[in-house]
Length: 241
Image (cartoon, rainbow, N blue to C red):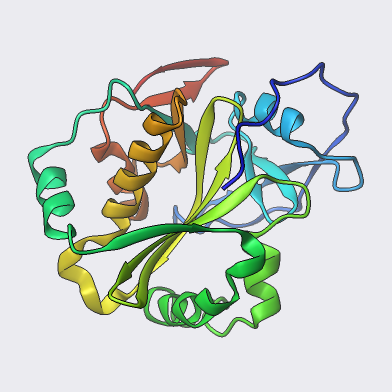
C-alpha cells in the first residue's frame, strides 16, 4: 500500500464531457447522464483529491459524476471515520469474521482475484451484460494507470473471500468496488469490507471514507445509510444525511 499522496495542488484547466442519455441502473423509468473529466487530460492524484470534494468518483482511468437533468437522487456520501460508531449489528459482523486474515495487494498483483470477481458478477448481476467479464475487463474497470489504489483482501485460510478496491487520497480513502464469495451470505462480507476500510482510514490518520453515491429510493444503495454518521454532498455543501 502506498503512503499518503501530496496535498492537492492548484486546479488545472480541465474540460468536462457529458454522455448520451441511457437507462438508469437504479431508478426504473429514468434516464441517466454522467459527466466525465476530459479523458485526454493528464489526470492525477491532486486533481482527484479536488474533484472528490465535489462528488466525483473513479472508474478505471476516468473520473465522473452523475448529472441527470431534473434529478438529484444520486447523492455523494462519505463517512467521517473518527466519528463513526459501529451499530450492534455491525459489531456482530465484525466479531463473526474474526477468523479472516487481511492483506493489501497492489493492482498488478490482483490477477488471482479475477475468478472471485467473475463469480460475484455471475451471482449478483446475471443477465446484466457484466456477468461474463474477461480479465481485461476486470483490469480496465477496477485499476488505473495514474491512481494510488490497492485491493484490501480478506482470506479464510488461504482462500480470498472478499476484496475491496480502494483509492488512497490525501486525507481520505475511497471505496471503489467490493466483490466477495456470495455463498458466505451469513458473514455479510460487503458490510465487513466497509468496516475494514473505515478502520484502515482511521489507522492512516485520514478524515473520510468516500462511499460513492447513495440513492434513497434504491434498495441496492440502502446499505450505505447504515454507516453513521454519514455526510452527503448537496447544493455545493457536505451536510449530514
